[in-house]
Amino acid sequence: MGNFQKLRVWQLAKELAVRIYKLTQSPTFSKDFGLRDQIQRSAISIPSNIAEGDNLDTDKQSIRHFYIARGSTAELGTQLIISSEIGYITNQELETFDKDCDKISAMLTALIKHRSK
View 1: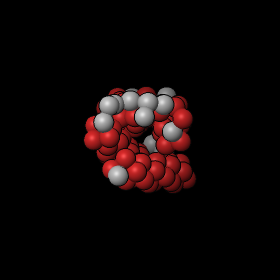
View 2 (view 1 turned 30 degrees about the horizontal axis):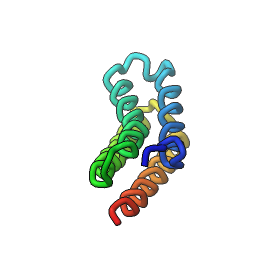
View 3 (view 1 turned 90 degrees about the vertical axis):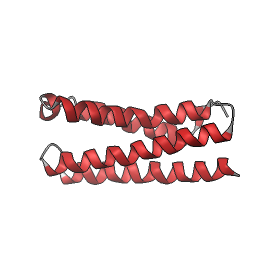
């Protein structure tokens, strides 16, 4: 516990958050403050909760934060689907982000199972 920067799931989630921030700086998102802010919050929540969870004293506390991170991954995925359907991102961008979210979610599930033992 306590070295979250070495966790591959944290690294991927942090990279995803950076890409989401860059995406939402585009003119497409510039006037849609609500969606832009919400998508940024859910993206930043994923690595933040992984980091916080990894630094807590008990596995039970850690697991709770990993579940929150997994929920934020689903939230981000939903917001990206909506972004695609309203024309803010392409289907190809959605597919790439969706694969990233699925991978992070699967890694969080594995981490939760590991910490539950």
